[in-house]
Length: 376
Image 1 (spheres, rainbow, N blue to C red):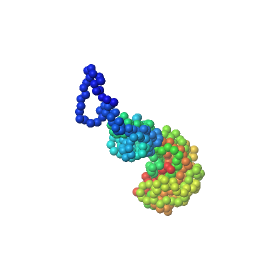
Image 2: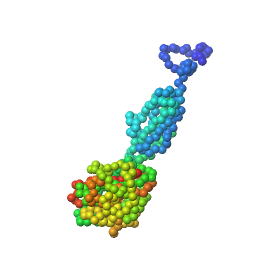
Image 3: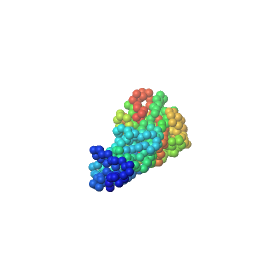
Image 4: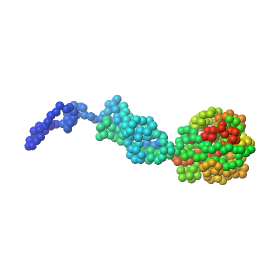
């Protein structure tokens, strides 16, 4: 290949020369290639491990290259395709400034980069989709290859597999002798989990005189995001496939049970049965204690629990489930586990409960350290 050496004569432009080195036209490209210096680095493909991901989960991108020497570098980035513009704070393992850019060492023509989405439970719907891209160097956008689009599923509720969730919103002060005859309270939590799980409920007594801290459960309900009933258990003198631990678990004054959800899941459970034993949760229709406990459960034909304090009336001489704690160690826990249920993101769990104490114990009982919920 030659430059115009005078073959085109009429009105031809004479070449100007400078001392600047580099590749400036096709002739220079030819000479560079002839000398074996042609830049043949390229990104062949970028393939994601999945195209749908939940907040809090990870996705890996396999980058296949050609012509990049081992020990070289690959530049990569993330771009928002739709939804709220994504930044570094949307990825828990990246950090750094925006826009989201990075560089990795190249190894044996196949490289993997993993990014982890930040868990933003309760943060609202963002409807994010994004692509991951790689290129041989910054400024070489012509070499850029992008992955297929990744869709992010927003975590709209609480991740109940990550940690225990406090389900006690109220403590009743009972001034009457015997079991409390007033209405039950109902708490609720919206979950960010989907899939098959079992609920684990931990009852923890915190009163300085443990005799006064019998914690009672009358019902548990699961509703969907539209508040339509999915499952309800009215606690009667029937196990209904629920199970319980048969030995009280020691605890301490720190909030939550003295073990993780996973650890509690690994304990030995037996079928639910009658109560009145300080080692485990069981059914009863009286605690036999003064200023604590409930006189009766709720109606067995209840189809919906109303969230709030004092919303569910007692009915007849109906049963409920409770943890007898007379003579037990302070801060000890007892666990019960539900049958498996397939949850969807946005479902809500409701617990009908009572934490009832005399006024003399009001300064020693920690209401928000009494009833804990987790999924396993």
